[in-house]
Length: 102
View: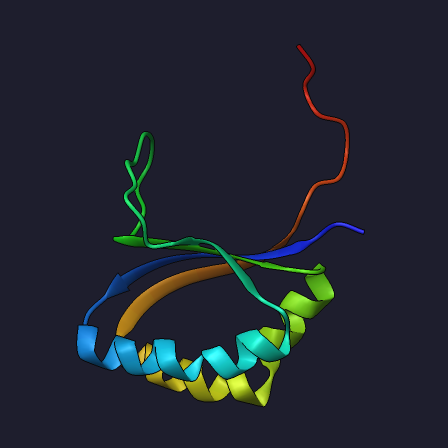
């Protein structure tokens, strides 16, 4: 079964309030087995445009990623994030098909 991912592009507008969001989202992420793959590290935009910060979170599958987002735990944290940032967030199914070979 393909994994599920949150792919998030964020501009933080209030760093102190964003820290409260980051602390609050931990309960939902623990409950749903989230794993950070990218969490705002150094990035270079090669084409197009993105926000300041990129986050990629892995879940066991797309259904779990959706359940986490819609959970009461995450919705409580989300209320904090909305006052502290502007974000684009997509939930996407991973790919388990053939890969390029040498």
